[in-house]
Length: 483
Image 1 (tube, rainbow, N blue to C red):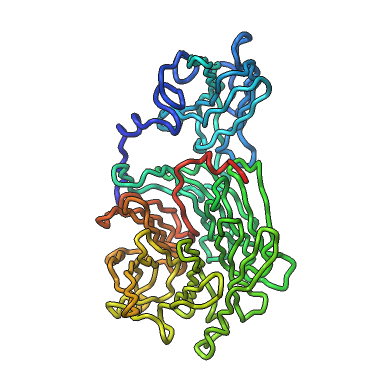
Image 2 (cartoon, rainbow, N blue to C red):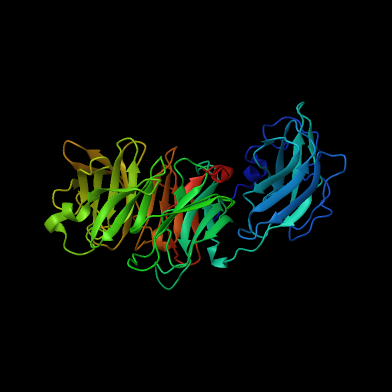
């Protein structure tokens, strides 16, 4: 097993998001005393402490509780006695790093703040800092609190490699995982956010009769959006849903996406694209607007014609929209093919893979087999997770597009000699700065590679649990702004 590389010096010096080591979100000198805000007397391990704050201080009746639904989320409430300046909440993480919530403008009266980022079973002290218009900071007394135990121990992965000097700057990762070691697509599925040391800082259990494999940050930011796919169980009472949820859970919205089969993609206006099984085995690319109205963009089986040799020829395992061209990549696992469709007209612009008329591969052996999650890089190359043509090994491949020769020319490959083989799923996403985020699907491993192809970070579960889509997250509080 690879070695976990921990830069303890970096951890001790790394400033908390939105604050320097003075405890002020924008730096400067603090008058408020020690980072822990003073004595934690009056706090209780279960987070039930209250009535903290000196009578003549700006913070009165400070209460800190552990959220009953997500035991890594803290809820802070208090009375503020001033209406000038600003305030924020401070706490210390498991590495001893002082953290702070985003500052808010002071307004006398009741205040509330969620604290995002604590790990499970963390004992910490929570302090409210108040800055007056002259920049002087006063801190409340501290409330001691201990976060809860994860509801499913198997949800917790392990970081087996981490070199902070070679990873991208994002501190957390969003994804989904199926905690089931007996078979795939049976559930239960969990959404999660983990930090770079693999510690879960947020989770959400998806209802047992559906799967979630494509969670993502909403296009407009402010929350997470994910699907409740119903395992293609059409004709039953359950209807597929698309859900929007803030990390605090204070805002939740569900919209029916009737006949959503396996995957979905979101557009900037909140519309969703999905594989529509309303007339199975025919499969449509359908767009549903925020008001619920739908339009069929493309009929896959009609386009396939005689090339369709089974009911699953058009079954899709990923949909990806490209803003620059307003086109959609549609990946079909049974047909070993990826189609690019014009979103406005439904015309097929080009297709790659095993179907007649597809672009060629250079070299010829760099083709698709059960490919998944085709995605465009910032440079306009195509990334794909795929088996080798003999189906015996796995590769992540990047192709440059030769339009004149209608050829995908392989320019990068990763996987030779790697003892991992996702039967289903898998994805590769090129990050800013040149690193690549990899997902090994049913092998339950996430990796970040540096531009030299070396593993800079690896996250793995104890069992080969199936993973859904991943996204790196730089700011947890941005996912609690709502819509």
